[in-house]
Length: 283
Ligand code: ATR
Image (tube, rainbow, N blue to C red; front, side, top):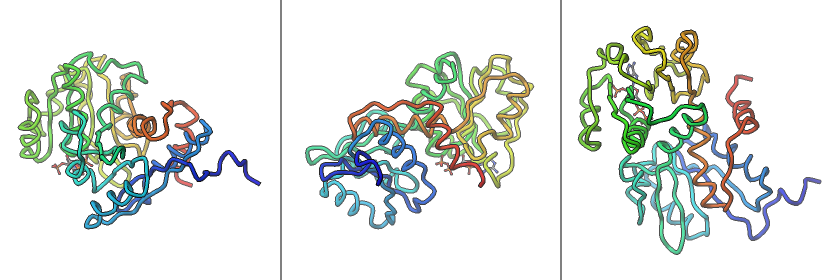
């Protein structure tokens, strides 16, 4: 007989994660861990929603009494467009990953940038310590760049397809764009290097960059978390540089949603990290 405290009651608050596909999402594991840890009467479920059904499904979830949802690939832009109210972070990123349903309204936030900054602080890095070099111009890069800029950091962006970087710079004034080939040469001035490309991910080629060009106090972050230590992070560690892996962002970005839906501000600690990591490691 499982502990009755772990079984949702009729009054349970309900949230989930919308994606297509959604089977790869680690969010149910993260939120499920916190629900148990804090003994909350609630549930958090995966929601496989086809792109052409997204609006209908989200309005249905709100009507059905869900407290809110996380939104993952490929729905973050559609979520942004559907919201009645948007946080400044969602507006800057042009995408929403956390929706709260309340009083007939859908409010959208983007917690990726916030989660990234929290993952730096967890490693003892001051996100505002100095300029940052960002590699990649996808959705995560946009959210991270906006948050760094918000903290007063000068951000330089390099992307293989320069036009995508230029498009980002049009939305984020002050962003400095350089050619992809200039990424190593630009390292010398940076307090922080962030890889937001898919390079270094399991099955993808490694990111090639000359870390000898970085100063001794440059911190190196990767948002890739499979593998946890990417070739970039391994190189940085071998040089004695401070490293930040992608699991921190994944865990921290989940905190604001959980707090809004379930009423408890959750903590990221070693036990949560190990629990999520156990699911990332090959069996
Ligand atoms: P997100 O999930 O953050 O939205 P995405 O849109 O899938 O990311 O973008 C992946 C990023 O990895 C892009 O910046 C992509 O560069 P392009 O804009 O030129 O496509 C980058 N990327 C993927 N493969 C790459 C490679 N072999 N070399 C350099 N950059 C690469």
